[in-house]
Length: 98
Image 1 (spheres, rainbow, N blue to C red):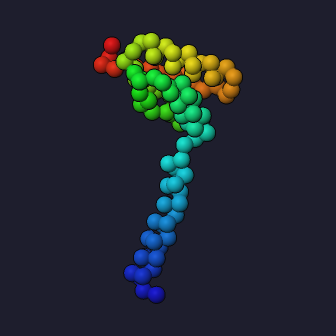
Image 2: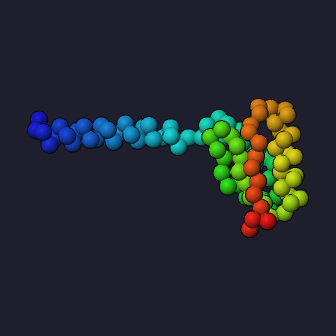
Image 3: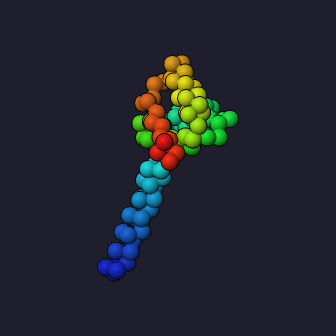
């Protein structure tokens, strides 16, 4: 085997390993999965809230236009936490910085 073919083989093996590891990197944590389920339940009929992201620890970050919808979502998320696993307190930001 030549040096070039050995390097090519090594590069191919490294690439395959990186792809395999990369799949796990893009998978949600159990806390994120739980937070996403709660978010879907609590915002099913809310149009004035938008999920910005869910941190790896399960903290939900969202924006809102309507203060009423924000409050209803926060109440729902709090109630869900009483009956199940605890997640960090959500962070809500007004659209347009209001």
